[in-house]
Length: 147
Image 1: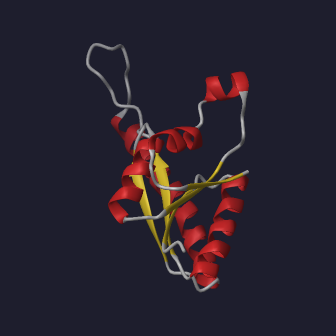
Image 2: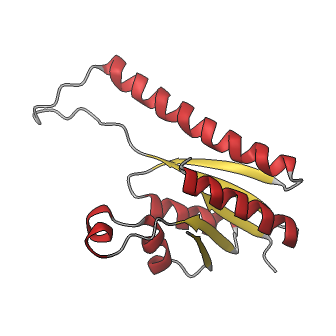
């Protein structure tokens, strides 16, 4: 049924459970998985904005974000490999993860996006936003939500 799943992950326990579900689903359908991690932009110094950022500190922030993304995706890749599921990974630097998720799924020809959601409602959802909700709203690709 599904041949290529895009699975966004942030390394949280809920996201890790979604990764496990995606691997089980991919194994059942003989599908492959692309794990996806959106890395936030590190702060950028701006002339005249009153922000002073040490260039070395900025470099360290980028390195830490890269290392965290690598660790998150390496763990997901290892779990897929153990289950005999073909998998690869994509890291994208973006302040709007939902856009990166959708663009990556379209570019790679994914036919399902499987992602976690904390299921926030009401004010919590309004204040914190929901990348899952934004993906659901803006894509035509089927989305399976793990809660």
